[in-house]
Structure formats: C-alpha cells, structure tokens
Image (cartoon, rainbow, N blue to C red; front, side, top):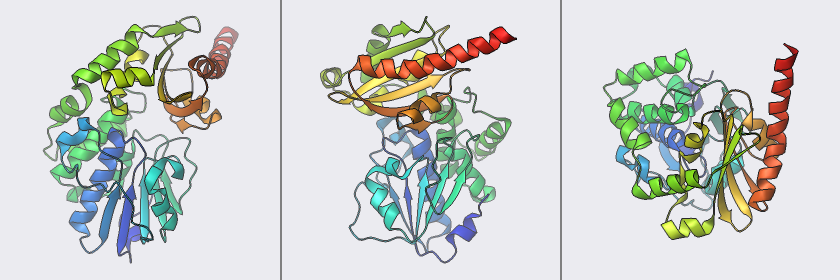
Length: 325
C-alpha cells in the first residue's frame, strides 16, 4: 500500500493519464484523482491526459479538463498512470510518461507489467476507482469526487454483479453513497441509458451473432462499413459484449470490431470457467480473468479460429476435471 502524501512530497508538477478509449473506470478514477489533487494540493501543477470522454459520461461534468495533446519537451515531476496494463495503453500520453522524472502505476489488471517506478497493482480489486478510493483520505472526499469514483466502480463491476465485486467493494460503494451522491442517477445515466445509435448497433450485433463451440460461446462481428452506415463511434459499442455474455448456456462472449481492414479490436467476456485474460495475453492483449481485450489481424474467420483454439482448450480441461470427480 502506498501513501499519497509520501508520493507527492516535493513534487511541483503531476500528470495523470488513463488508457486509450477510456471507459467508466478510467474516466472515474482519473477525474476523481484529478479533482482531489487540485482541491487539496493546489500548489502542485496537475494535468490530466485522456482521449475524448465518451458521451455517456459527459453528464458527470468536467469534460473540458483532459488535455488531448502533449506539449513537446514538457517534463513532470510525477506521472500517475491509472487503469493501464502497460505503457503502450496510455496512447498519445506515453511520451509524457516516459519523460517524467518519476512514475507511478495504479491498476487492477492481472496482466499488468509493473512498468512504472512504483506500482500499486491489486488484481483482486474490482476497479482502479476502488484503489484510488483507498489512496485518498476518506474524510476529504467530496460529493463530486465520490460521484466519479462511484461511476468507475459501477462500470467495472457491471453495477455490482460481476465476480470481481467483493465485500470490500460494497463497503467502498456504501462509503461513497454516504457522501450524498445520487447513485441511481449515475447508474441510469452512465450505464443503462443508451442513444438510438447504440441501440441500433446492439440490435445488429445480437441479430447477426453466432453460437460456436457447441453453444458454449457466442460471437458477433461489426465491420467498418456498418459503423459508417450507422454513423457510429467506437464508444457506441460499449456494453454489447456484456449483453452477449448474458446468453443462457454461454460461457464466453466475443465481439470483433473492425478498426481498419483486416484489423480487429476483440472484446472477451466469460462467466465462470474460461480465463479470457490468458487468451488475450497470448495474442498480445490483456485484462482480467472475466473481461479482457486484444487487437488482432486477419479475417474475422481467422481471428475467431485463433481465439477459439485457446478457449476450447480451457473448456475441455474443465470438462476433464469434472469427469475425474
């Protein structure tokens, strides 16, 4: 466990960075920490580097806080990387991380490479937002800071339903609710509410999905031409793979989204058996045991075949283990 006061001692400038295509936990943890530092450490120059905040989270405010470009040659005393499994995931802000005098990583991905000078990595934690909560002085957490941290936890736990939700997670959620936040509004507005385009993409993904591996897995593919037709953004695909995962009898859900011709962003989700982080890591990605991602090249058929080889191996091993019992 690190002590925030010790980390910030003697620092005059701090940069905070999150991963590419920021999700709820990334936005919640980075903005929650940013607001805490600017409130209680005003003497420290603090900047947040993040790609554009998805529309779903803009109701929370502070959409103009993140910097989307870096200043060449800018050197910070400390760079705090949040919710990133490796430095490459920082995207455009990676050079800022590399140039910083000191670096700190706060993360909960099991595939994290401990790439910073100091690493606070807890794979069993529900979210990076939960870890940020542990770093802060609870008495100093304002309602606004609490709202962002709560949003982050909500998104990475699937509204407290995923297996990563622990008793400690629920206790942190309760502590944040005691700050006076409107938890139901945060859940409805940032998690459940969808735009018409998002619902169109969800409908298309469900309609064209396929059951594979003896109906133990479901897969759907979204092509660039479809994104262009519906005028959809990558953030409009958020949550689709989780809905696929809800299919009765399915252990693994796979969503392929075409980034460019023959290149796909793959999202993986599982229920109880398959370690999808191991599958993603094999092909250069990473994540959690039940939620992971990777970018792969090839046709959809090739990508799906490569993924299912490893998934089927885990399913078969589990079956053999059950037979031995």
